[in-house]
Length: 134
Length: 387
Ligand code: SF4
Ligand code: SF4
Image 1 (cartoon, chains in turn yellow, blue):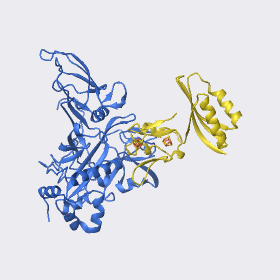
Image 2 (cartoon, each protein chain N blue to C red):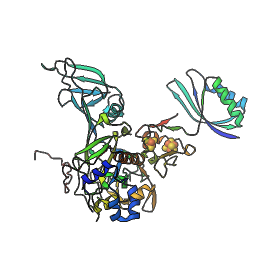
Image 3 (cartoon, protein in one colour):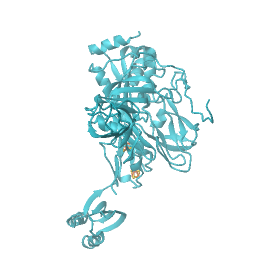
């Protein structure tokens, strides 16, 4: 059994639910919806925590893609663009769990697994180098 | 034995100069002592890369045909000052755009120009007999401009304070987001690598000092605004509170957009990260003593930014070493500290300036004149009538 975080994006007009039900049945996967987000009816985004056999998860992901659902395995809901980042440290001021942290040479490091998805770092970054994936 | 600027420049020319950064020099002094180190080292490079709001650019667009005397000027929807001559303007770093607000402001236009991008220029005018055009709408890049130079009225603060918030609400400041109930501390300094902390009495940094400025060779053009050399100092001359500042000038056409970056502080405004490096000539043992300063020796005040008055209380005086350690202790509570300026970029700049000098691409310029050392800062009185 493994647990993975999957970020699903549904194109306009497609219904997420039937596809999700299919996932449970066919691939014997358990999941929690961590976040659901609909962007002005343009596209829907679902952040799932999926539990199951590795192989089943892989097959499930393929199944989703075949149904025009974008799937991406992520560890954290934020993404740091290191080309934009200047390693100032402003984001570390708001991160309560040190998922964003300065190393001993004052480079920014991002421990993806520690992230609590509070999104505070997104607005704290003066370079707008942190993107929210959901 | 004292060294002159001319002697050090001669050594640079011959490729014999010993140049080290203000961090590297600490170890040299620890090993060899002040006297020997002063003879051995010729130049120490210092640097900083942090948000500096008091920044901006003078630009000249050249004349169109027929010409226009621009009075309302927009660059990528950011307003620039129209109160200069026909096609001259000053673009302030903190001016927000009309379409993207603080996320894209004057600083971002400056960064884009330096990066060689073309920028949308829209200007209006009343029209005059000699400047008949009333509107212009065009695109320009930095090569089209006759002159483009940064003139930053206040940069490289000597010993800025650290910030904390004692209120029950989260506050948004130019020192970043401060969590309620003393949830965090932020600071903005390169500490022992910081230019004005390595020459606390401004012996070698004055008007005309040649510097690394945004990737180009620029100059110290004047004392910076809010220049406070009358600040309190420790027994070695290092300021205990914010002290001197510098006005800087440099050619944007020679700059690199890696070292000039637009920034946006949430619910505060646009600012600009400015990369500055200043070489300190080791003229004598006193200068060597100054540049050997460490984060342990330097202190600053943690100020309560939740107090919305002019005199904000000091919560604690701490050393830069404590701030850099990642947490400070305040009344028995461990509080996280976070930097706002980039030490990594400051190190890169100090290294780059060192490279330039070692490669005979950069020579020291002795100041044309020294700055006043007993300058104080006025507040602004609110008066009911003319004085
Ligand atoms: S989203 Fe929150 S927890 Fe995650 S890195 Fe950003 S500030 Fe830290
Ligand atoms: S606040 Fe932005 S630029 Fe600064 S270290 Fe964090 S991600 Fe990098």
